[in-house]
Image (cartoon, rainbow, N blue to C red; front, side, top):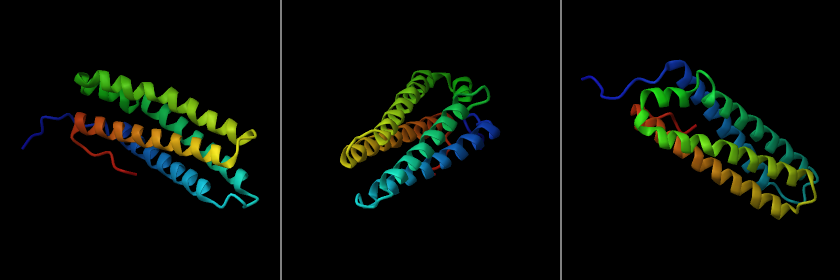
Length: 149
């Protein structure tokens, strides 16, 4: 039986899936860093390192999905009916990028550990919702699960 849904471009889909996994691993790294004992003398260094990794992974995600051969362009072409939602997901990118940068500034500054943890965990929540929005969008367009990784 033939599907009523278009096939995603294999290359951009694979690249987006890979960036998705990288981002999930970076998120996990921040979760682990934030859960370390605050008295650990390496706490802030570990937190900064994890946050830098998250910043890098998110930047790669944005570059990949918004790039010339990226998944958002494919979605726009293959499922124009979803253009408003595609724009909404795309609009989340600069907001999240700024939020991660703000948390990093806090880590480099004199924010308390509790303030830094709260800001980092809030950023992770926003990223989790963004990942859900992306997965829902891909599924609605292609009837394919991009994966939870």
